[in-house]
Image (tube, rainbow, N blue to C red):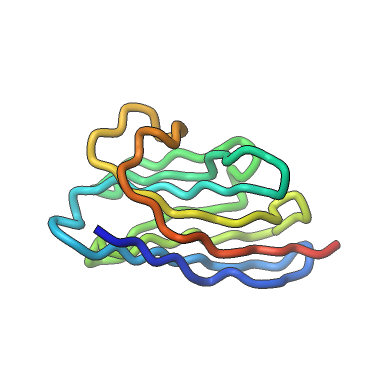
Length: 123
């Protein structure tokens, strides 16, 4: 199973950006997907997650109401729509996939990780 994240870039505060994560491999539709981020000097933190069916989503409080996670129709692509971006959102964003996830916010629950895409929000 491989994950490929894309869509990062440099934007100004208040702008929007959409990240994509494409998963390839066996039985991709059965994986729950999550987005995490890591800012310089900080620990990796949970951003958002979506169940394999797409019926359940979870968000970190810091992004709730501004970010939206969704799955494509083929379920092998997950999107993170980020609106009203703030400088505090600056980080490398990672997508992750897992099958038996009991707590979406815990990185160790995920089995596979993408390489990360950098999001920089200027003030």
